[in-house]
Image (cartoon, rainbow, N blue to C red; front, side, top):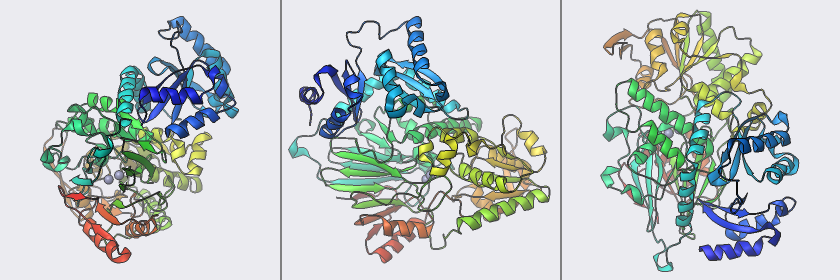
Length: 639
Ligand SMILES: [Zn+2]
Ligand SMILES: [Zn+2]
């Protein structure tokens, strides 16, 4: 489309002379335009808008340091001066938490509790910073509660920023180099590498004549046997360097857990996801490595590989149309499953094919998110999840579920027992936290709610992205009334044994299916007492310990402190409260397929055991469209 010279000419023609256009560079899917003087754009952004329309790309404007001695490689004193100036310009209520200089991007990174106040009314504060310091700010929101993940990711990004800049420039060139007319794509095909007629290790290879993308790349955390735990990449021998990008719909390990493995084996291409997905998946991957090591198993990758992955993440918000290759445009849409979860819409070729991959989604009410999107520009094929697609998978109304949950908790506390709720640290735990927080406002709670594992950390990440939450929750986070910080919640640090030996309480602990992590530790100590209660609030897959307990197993064999298997009776009361799932139930899956606009030609079902076939059969009968439920390793031509 645009070679370097052509690009220069277009930009030079559009921008006013007094801006002093210096250069433009692709930066992944965006374009960075460097000028000497930003003032002409302060009151009139029409030039930048026109440029974005002509180039069909997001345009980032920055002040160039080229030829300006002293801007780069500033010494301590000069940095301090700029910092001081910024703190003078920005009102103290903005609560700046960090100031860093990212020299590779010519930007000053400002982290603040109230980013809106750093920008100021009509962007006035921001303009003043640019005018008086010559630095272009990049503004980040600080979490309202401490988060080592956010801190770690942000400082790692800065450390590696020069390498990241190089990667983004090269990626931009690749995305903007179209194939010759006679080599345009003519076909589209998918191959099932994981998560087909099963739950876990979701992975789809999407291919056209010219491109290869991976849609999700997860693991099945219930097993350590590679042939069942990991996507079957080696079976079809795709060379890693031929993959243009990995698209991750959300952070759960069954969708993101295998991504760092590819980096361990030399993959150096982009990972497309939303900003919260990047942060949450890193949190879960680090946690996974820790759990594997602790249980004496070799994790498939190291923390170094996760950090490398972070450098290659290209984050996009919902509804941002993004070129991911010369022929493929990607747009994320709200999936309402967990923070940052998305449906991936792919526009392939000029009208060759439009594919919607739903990932996990909730087409129904939750406390955290707005309902999943159903409006799209064009769709020919939908690949949709079917976790609860069976004919008996009808969930009760949310109101009834909440009542049952709080009644069950009250009953247990009143008889002197403890309640263990195994939850995913991301998703179900925050949803249950909001239910308990709301309940505590009406009924004084006389017991604490302990949060173990990564739940508190994951909640902190929610406070960095309030715009991804439902309006009322967003409002509370923004006005110092975050429900995640309610006094009913207590973090378990080194006092797990005290919690176990202590007074009646509620414990939220991962993993959600009792496949590892702190929830197992609590179970070991709470299982023999019939006053205690185990409440399942989420999906329990076929191989999990959770499913076995749901099915009525009354004796467990679990490793003790020395790692020896110990038999123990299950006297704890076991119950399941349906209705809190982040997945759509059968009714919601069917309504989604019925309401999605425009109507697709074909629906492919994934992410379900026998439910994939059941849902495919039902949708075919009800909607009279072609449906398929491929088996793992099947390949299917879409066009
Ligand atoms: Zn999920
Ligand atoms: Zn999933």
